[in-house]
Image 1 (cartoon, rainbow, N blue to C red):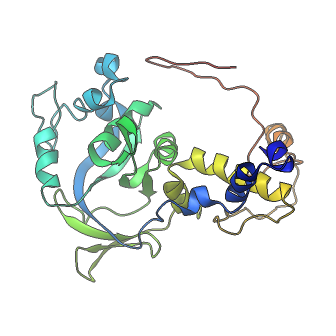
Image 2 (image 1 turned 90 degrees about the vertical axis):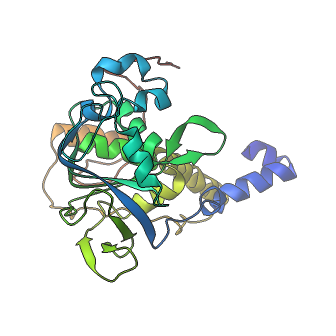
Image 3 (image 1 turned 60 degrees about the horizontal axis):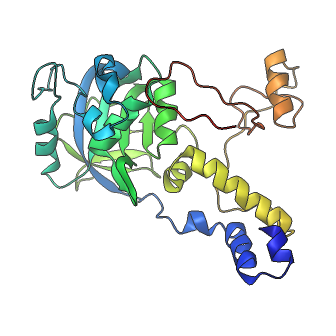
Length: 294
């Protein structure tokens, strides 16, 4: 593209300028200052087998079909449509009749395996349509006292907003609440009564939601920086910057040196954000179709 721009192609110049101006990001809606949700409460622990039952692995590529098995085994407050076969679809539809999107709220959410289909099921039933992408949804809100790290990361990659270390005791099945992501508080709907408070795991989390996911943000932000570097501009100040840990002045372990080398650094510290140069991508314990490209 830069070669075409240098050759005088006006459209190529516009494309490079658009990337430099981060229009791909700014043209997407920012996360609202306030959003209203209806609570889908799951008490106790939710593991990925609850959300994506292993016995239904054959249906995982068909997300709408596979989501029917989510919580197919009844538990406190949740009644399956057909025990062991179809989850609480009627209950979910009844909650949606209140006119608000549903939020998945639990004490401990997403433990167990790393299967992406668990996230797909939650988002299909409680997320937002993706324009021109059938049978898949993004967005969505998950609140939990604890959220398993891999599940949290998968939700990030899907463009959802996972918030952990938030007390959910005051949120019950069917409750309607307002969430203020920038202020870090949850209130009773149309009320100043605070039900819970929280702090986002990272200052970049809301940018990830706006970008449609963590990976689109990383790729898009990188292209914006490359376009700006090509044009002799500094880094964009549009994106939120991750918090970096304080340098302890100590040495690095071998693993920290290895990751650091891939990032062009001497080493990395726990909690540091970095983007290593990737040369190989592997997949472990994959169920369903997979495309490998090199």
